[in-house]
Length: 293
Image 1 (cartoon, rainbow, N blue to C red):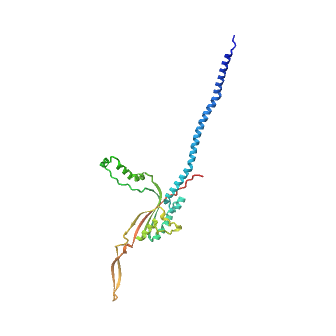
Image 2: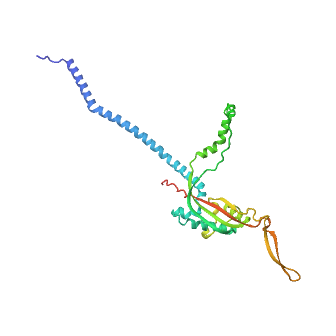
Image 3: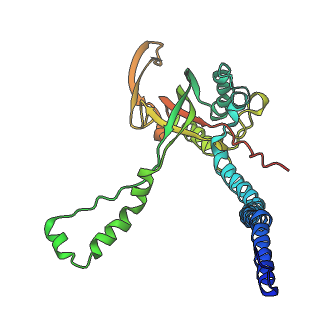
């Protein structure tokens, strides 16, 4: 026969029951919520870090846009010399068929104002050419005794500084541009040649009025290079003579033929045949970056 539970036993049983209920409630209800809370905190931390990163990038947009715009303006100014006005139609339409015609119109005013007599005008057509860097590489001598004497490395350091520019430029990547080569066969005086070169170089007092549509007026502002000049008579007649045959009549009316030598041109003011090679360079203008609103 089971005895009746004492008050003490009832209290113990009650406490155990409460503990069991609390434990079951914790594992059944509170623990999942706690786990969710921990997971949510981790998600919040990750999201906050991503948000902070995005905000940091957003803060960099305006300075970055400003920097890109400044670099564009600087690059545009540097590249302007290779944006040849003579090739406007080519840069705008990518149609190369008219390039030779336009180049003829572009150069003709310079030739006319230089008063050169043209006997041949050869347009080579457009092509691409790699532009190399122009730099001087010093000729530095080294030998075993010099290297042995350079215990402090001073000579090696000086040589490195001396070769720094040429070494840096030799490692830089080169670029291709569009070119159009022209060969002119002309005849004229030294003065005519120097006037032609002065107009190409844009020297003061050598402005060009311009040809059709003013194509020649800004020729010196474009990238053009005289690659060679071949002068048949570089003295332009100085010291040379020519044979003249003429008839002379004496007092009695007798006619005789006289042949004599006379100077061909005084002080080198004569004419000479020349071949002038020109190369025009061109590159498409840099597009302005689209940075949005």
